[in-house]
Length: 147
View 1 (cartoon, rainbow, N blue to C red):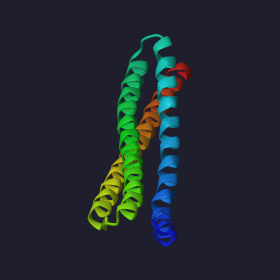
View 2 (cartoon, one colour; view 1 turned 45 degrees about the vertical axis):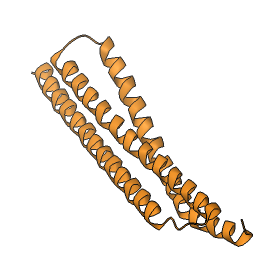
View 3 (tube, rainbow, N blue to C red; view 1 turned 30 degrees about the vertical axis):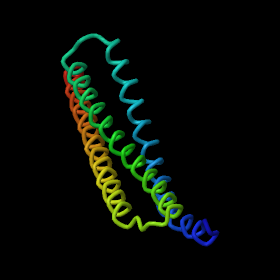
């Protein structure tokens, strides 16, 4: 392989590598949120059974499913980008034009990333709803105790 072809392959792979960096950051955030959800669920399991604890546990369970799928989609995106980078280097070595394969892989990785981000946004929405429910319950409980 000529050094010029290798240099061009490296230049072509730079954008997908930056994409991988961004996806890794999203995965870091989503896995951190997943850990917090699991920790909160375990804490709730130790508390007494009340309607509000049961409701929060159901929301935590739903959030864990949603964030799981977000992590799966973002991981799929990262894997597709890795394959895309490999195809770029293999095509340079074998001397064929990877335009259709790389286009397909890039579009699929973007679809996976968009799906992962939408699921992440939905999980944030569920978390905000949890805070609203707990806040309402806390206000109601305070009014009953002060009366």
